[in-house]
Image (tube, rainbow, N blue to C red):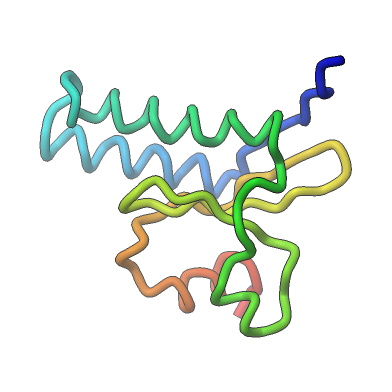
Length: 114
């Protein structure tokens, strides 16, 4: 029996993140080819879509786990991290960002409102 599919949604912030990542890669390497913006975006979208069948596959976000917050999970697609919140019948992707950023500050601003 097939496992039911979970609804995967992007927050406005995650949509902006993906758009920014695409634009930066487009300006650096162009749109086509293995290292181009199209391939990068396709890889990130494939990772996000995989959450429909495996919403709890990623580990808890370590920076938040240290604060006792265990609801948020992450996927890694080097050098990017995809931060998401699995809920009943739904996954919401909240952040897609370069892992070389200051993630404590980013998560504080985007998820914790600090």
